[in-house]
Image (tube, helix red, strand yellow):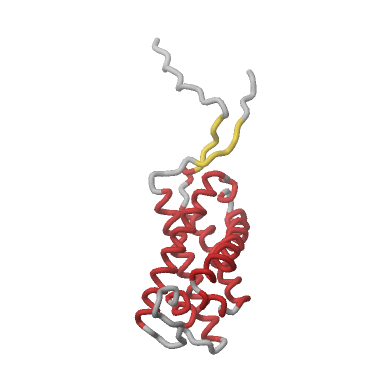
Length: 181
């Protein structure tokens, strides 16, 4: 009997993209909570990180205190961006399913993913579309992206059903017919 070459693959359930989106939104919530606590601890003001994001829209300024328009816009933009990056992480997990094989894989890949998101959003896109982000505290901002990546990775790992994973052969064989006696 010839031994078949097997590879691991991810077979997404019908709710896969919803899980990835939810993991990204919850990761963004944890990122925002971390940033707000760090800002409050350093006396920048609890609302400063959210209003900095809200300042992406014309006419809104970053503020240390609660400013309803800037806070609302900041939350909406941050959660929407988190959802997008969660979907992207879900797509990567489909291409490289080993990232979700264990908690350690989810944490490790989440760390790497958080750094990648920080490089793209934190250093390039964010400051271009919102110059106020250039004033973000750099270490806290970097650590916030790590929080996002780890939380997103671990949440998607925990939400992925065992049925999402299967071993597939390189050559798919048709199902065998039952024998009639």
